Image (cartoon, rainbow, N blue to C red):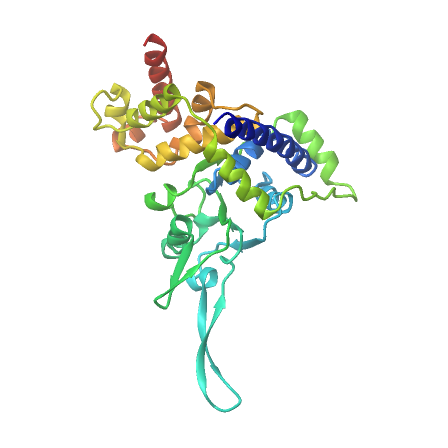
Length: 336
């Protein structure tokens, strides 16, 4: 057991050094937005999918392209548009005629058969097309013409989404939102960062990203994340926080009962459990802390909860509700 723990500790420390090089390589093309970069890396280290939300022009697509290079993944991009069909993503069967006159169906793979799928502006496609990703994101396989076809290993979806207030967007269904490990909010850069971006991106040279990982390395890192120990107090904090977001849960905070129409399910707790481990790993620590849970509460829960009509009419924001949940749960934990 001692040797196993020693191996795990050495593996975490070694992986931390490699992740530091990956962050440096990403930083050559993505200026600022360190929290966004780190959360995207957490998604990949956890073996999940990420939803990047922000207005156009904030380097969301550039970030996904850069991650594909740095992590050594076979990356494909699909530009979601209102006329995109499920077959454009999954692939389809075509009837071919051989030289001898015989006919047979041949399956042509769609772009989903890759290791990292960039679903660009996912909420500009119709709900029917959006739902084409549901099975793939959960089961890592797709069913086409009655036949199950496995996807590549690893398989990740990093989707970009415009704010739903913009014209020509369709809200993602709740079942699909729940399959995204994190919602990563991409905000405008501050003035000094925007100045750096302006100077770095309007010249002749465009610094390329350099590969640091390969697909087998990422799979090994994902196994390492799942082996990282988590204390009972952290497990209890995760459970208390997730369950506090359910309006029908006994002991739910008053503001949740009043404003929230539905809350996070067990998949939210699973996502938070993996994400806090990945965050600890990125920061070179051997186990997650309560600060990791607090830091990741918003990106894990924000897309897994919904406000009721009365709350929206009053201008209540879901981020504020989650903030109050975190404050109340942590106060109770501290008192205990």
